[in-house]
Length: 335
Image (cartoon, rainbow, N blue to C red; front, side, top):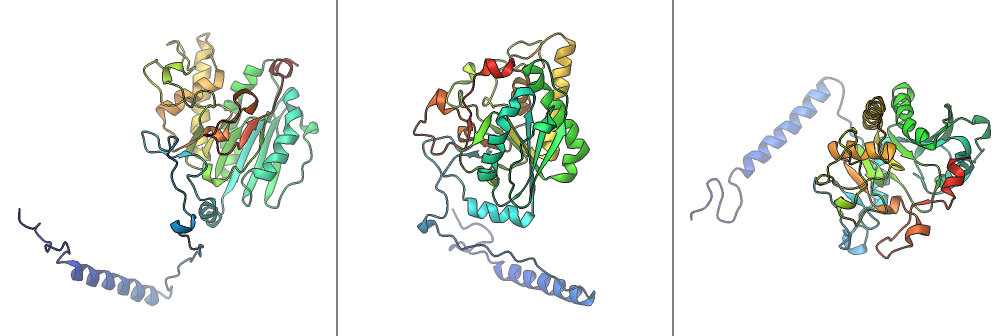
């Protein structure tokens, strides 16, 4: 076979010099017209530290875990990101992150530890708004905050059942996205209050839409997932469908995407309610249906949602970042 037209045998394109000339002409035109208009071109220069793969600065992808979804979204584990590079990128963008948490009824008892550990480990070095939804605003603890971080209390009504609190969360987050979050923050992280931050949770989680793998199902076949299986529910997922099982206790993304997610889940729950049905795992079931239809752009490993009391600490888990607080569920939920 002869050489490819337009290329020498050595593989160098014959039109290389023409491309170079065209590039230089474009640069000259930019400079000329910029000067002529009295507005010289200015570039924002960001200085980043020099990184070397030989010095271990760049992460080496894990070989013992799945690090990419079938739709090519990254799955975030320790060893798959460089936090220094990511921190610089997000600082240049000057982002503010919102963290929503619901402290309804006697779940207020968990709020102080949640906030204290968030101040130690969550988005350190970045601006954060803590949005505390509660029916007991006078009981919100005073926790010292770092510079650039605010605690905002949003009073909401309580509910007789914990399931109703869980399901109404979608409605309230969606409503406040439209009312204020779209103006106040760039990303929104939605978390459960009966947890604590144990290790670094930073900008590596941020993406347009992210979900977190359920620690009880991350290694299971999808047939074992506790999706809603009744076709009458809007959360229904057939047994031959499904990607992962996501935990309802930690999800988020851009405010616009979280608004779409929470609004869709609330509407689906209202449709179920009108038909006299309640999904098996309430808002979590609807979250899983939504993330099946709208693939997340990033997936967090179970490092970001773990229960050491129930699951121990397997070798695959290099870090436990956001963990359950030991509790008596029956006693807390029915007080």
